[in-house]
Length: 279
Length: 326
View (spheres, rainbow over the protein chains, first blue to last red):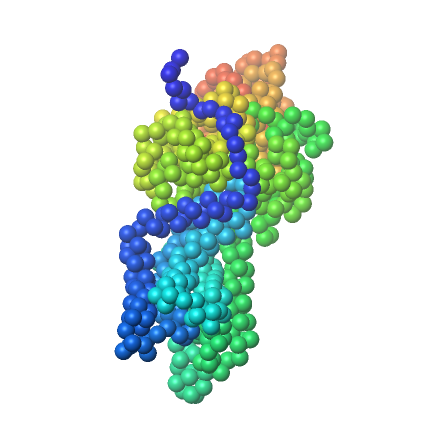
């Protein structure tokens, strides 16, 4: 009799209940992403603006000559606006392969033959992208607020701008959700992550170009609603209590964002299936 | 032809289908299918496009039927697909893996997806990979695997959570003869010695005959016949392989008119079933009467091929696959 039987043995151990499988997907996906050196480089670069703002806050708190640099509520809005470029790159780097690679490797039938639902699969994939997007938007912005309190040595600024906490949170989540849902939907339509990246960049640049050309020709911003990026800017101005930068009513901005998210969910519902039926 | 067991009558069955119909647009993939798969190893046999893969995907809850009911391990597919998938393993026909993973992380990941705790999943992944013969290659990226290794890794991911029932869709696809024999030996071992119920979908008759005791033969989206292989091979009588010089088609027609079962093969050899009490002399008599020369006569035994030929007619789709597998 062998000391250790390497044959097949029945399993009598514990089994996790249903409903937690999305976390298995999310955790594995996040680990796979952070193993990529190029992505870690991108993440480091994405935190450079945070370091710059920390220096700005430090200098303004310690040197009277540059007190004009003291943080205001707009600074946090500007910071989130600047992070938009990193949202774009992180979305492409992390999001493009999420479903496309699974489709290329026929992994969907492996996933969906396990005891998990299509919703759990999508939530797991969405969580991967959301986590990294919040890591370059919400996390540094909230940390900046904490740094301000630390350097000022008082809660006065935060107390006077209490709306900043929900504003930063809301804008970061909406921005991350729009980017994640759109990218995941695009990723589910192709087997090539490169093609998905081009599609996403195309959608973002093309819609912004239409809005900007229209503004240049007519001098008005009524066509800004075609650009998700501009609508997110509009929403950002709204939640940070700033003057709106386009003629589009805020309700339209909310509607455009809602349509984008719901449309993406509809595409995912159609594309994420264990069996691909071609009729 | 064996009568299909009814939904209510099936006792100790792992899978039951009751008048299940599935269509892809206008194409009817399954049409009023009623079948019962008993415990043990069951072969799902049929030519390409017969509806075997569709049936498996429907049983996994991936394809909702237009009508009909299905049960797997006593659970209703429509009501409890997750509970069913927790207890079954599925080895898909096409190449499938999670990209960017080593074999051991892939199989452990599948274990976790099936509900195993992370530590147990990793331990089981190592064990199962050894069992399927990939122990030495378990730290290699799955994308670098050969076709045969990919078949084994698909079996490993289906086994890692210790299912009560395994769906194996064309498990020997693209494997060399040695690998094919090893894969079939694994399937047989699982069914006979490990207590795992197995449903082997294949168009390769020898694969099914080697691994299974019971067979469900499908053709054009319907169940052509089902039963134990021994029963379907038929009771008494003898089989002869015959080749004649002359109009073979006329000879076949004559034999059939005389009530003898006769199937043509692709090699100009016909298989003739002679009833009990008769011998080869009856064939010589017919040949002499029709003025034909008997050029080849060899006693044979009823095989699953004969069952298949009886069930779906003269078409023998397994031949091409068998030659490729050889």
